[in-house]
Figure 1 (cartoon, rainbow, N blue to C red):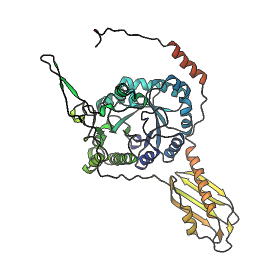
Figure 2: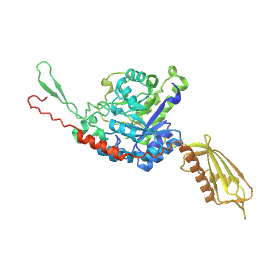
Figure 3: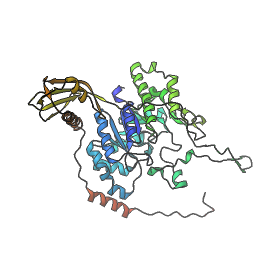
Figure 4: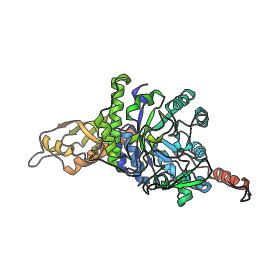
Length: 468
């Protein structure tokens, strides 16, 4: 398997988290928008932020995926989904992560060309589900978190589409996303992005005595959380995960802080690169890096999940104590190196050409003057031009061609730099843009109305004596 075929996928619950993930070496980032995401209580992205994130990811040669992984109501399907996704589709969003098969079908029809990733909440657990989703048009399946490496391998052998699997972060006690405890106990549905995590709460336990059939209660300590799982950490078994056919290594944690995202992503980036550099036979993880991951966040340690075992008490935290160590991950902003040529001669406009990976952008502005008094030096001009601020770029080389006796306002230098960088970005991003697809709203609404009118009603009646 080639390095370029493997993706390190990081979470971002905010724009700061997105920048942290890119800066730490993520190949792709998955985020939630203002609606239809399974982390409704994350900060999430507004439309302007998300459009900006899509462009920024593409400038850096990365990908951005949007979660639309809740169950939608008919009204939301027919009236909201198209308008919500259209701006991101046009901007060049790389893929949508989907749980609801109705949403899956609607997006495939409304936005041809959009890659569809079947969410872990689809609970795909075997080759049959994999093959079915391939036939429906999925480009990737996010496996259920309860699968072993052997089960994933069989899925990979069945279908050529991509496999994405969780390698680090929280485990769901139920089959991924299928738990109804939060909805039943508190009216907050996990299928609508509002899970209250009742599996993290303390409970009393009850035991049954088998000999006489009597039921006896055994009360545990008030802080015991019998359903609370440890987080997974698979840094030591990355070679086996890749060998099983996983192509996207997914880190969980859109509710976590940017520092956590940066820290975890940087460690997995380091060892993924080492794996391809040294090979699986020489793959070793340093003890200090294992400790670092635990210090970033843990609940009573970590485990490798279900990849190498079916289940067991070693996977259980039995508490909801969130532990961190004395670590302070560095948040880095990724910068792309650009080349530039600035031309300044009296009587001509200021001309700046910039290039990045063979792509060019340019700007021509105003008129360069002869200096009346003290001419500008190359050092002064270079100092001004090197102020790239909060852009995505840094100069690798800037050539300045100029007359020795010139004057040009600093404001004009700033403007020609801004326009040239905008021109460069337009050239970089134009290949990602898509044309608007006309909404067939009449067709969509008729389908929704037809579904609502033809759904049968079933009633089940039971007596108390027969109910279990």
